[in-house]
Length: 291
Ligand SMILES: [Zn+2]
Image (cartoon, rainbow, N blue to C red; front, side, top):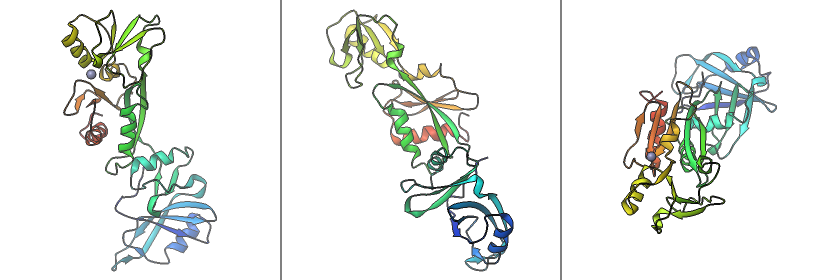
């Protein structure tokens, strides 16, 4: 199980002059009182670090006697990183740093504002994200990553990308003309003409590459029927490989105001706000969520 410090308590850091082993650390550290809010201590010596848990006795004012210390991770299993841009109060950010040292049981991070925190036995909650490209980068995935950079109220999340190339949905022999929802995505189809629905071009024998909303707009201007290659992420998500117990976040052209939960999938509106995206992640990781 992943251990983080309680985000309202400080991790103390001490440079010591004894071996980073249980016996010498116990003898040294229990000889003096600690601040009453300290639960963990990172001890450093000569470029190495270790993590200990502090067991405090009864408080007397600001300080409490230290009755016992437990060595949670010794120097051989601890990595110390300096990441001045990282907010160590955000579990997902700590886990992203920990991923840089996959063999370490304990990753201590000295981050922004000089704050030091750690993650022990990192095991992020995996949340799958299905998005389509172009445009690049995949917008939903990119925005969810940005939400996680400040999500100090969520557990540590690792996003598993499922990025679908729209070009990959086309048949091997391209058709003569494709109708795309708009020019903004920057998609080109080699060997085929491309028209844009939002420019309302003259009707041609085309195949619409779009979602249910584009289909409705097409039918409004031109009447049906039209050949359609469905690019709605919500529909594509039904084919994504998501292990049991894990959730997926995606988007749908038909949602306008709020998120929807559909089995293990959380669907957000196409142009979801950061608030809605944060809510979608909170739903995906529970409690009471979809997992
Ligand atoms: Zn849709």
